Length: 329
Image (cartoon, rainbow, N blue to C red; front, side, top):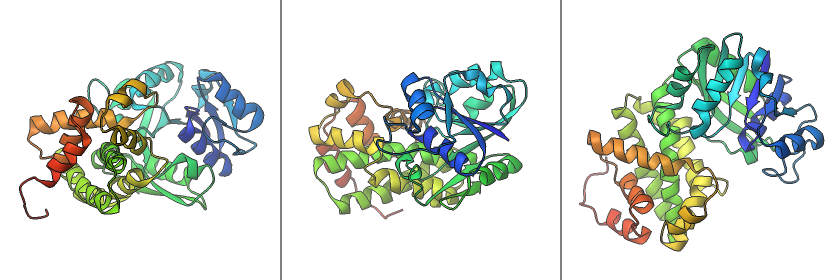
């Protein structure tokens, strides 16, 4: 079986190395010539993993025609690039492939989930399998124990991807609730921005525990309203991904929120950020949909106001605490 990983960033590189460890024929594609040459010539991706030596059999290229005879294509690009990349790939394919999606978010214009975007953009498609869950590339590339989930409407292809990526440090479970899983891993990014904001403002572990718990309630409320299953949010693509993203130094969403909290304003973030922070876009999408559908999302509403309406984080935290008293659920 031939695999191609699209995206020479941190997660694409880490997943390509997993496949090398599993003795799978894999090539890493990237548009950044320096990253590709670093992998191909030096067995490193110094931009993301300084000092880490990658698997010696990992090869990289900037030639997209490498996808032509692939069986499995792993998409490891930001949500904003998924549709365009799928259309480019589709013109090069001569047979149907399994697309493994790793992006966590929504289409920038239609607000579709990533699996929907891929299905609408491709004709040479066997199925979409989302490989998602609580994982940071910085740990996977060092072969630290990690569990994630292969989620698909196609059970046979989900089993295929599960077997392809599983080994002694990466355990892959299967899931079939595509709606719940994709909403869970997207929405937790917005909650993680809020977690970073609260830490930046100066709040501690008590606050973070409250945010994660109440954030999970909002994830369930929103996900079920959109057609997901409640039990999904108790698993890897729900509470699991929420915990790791809200607490880890590796999380871009947490880091972005932390910066906002330190400055008690989102202005500095908007003027200086150059990284992909999926939670910022997700907060806007979810806020707008929740408003239209009457879904109560107090945390999302406040982080939206901080990001897009100039509200001070300290004021938002106080308003959340002073809401009308109620039963927990």
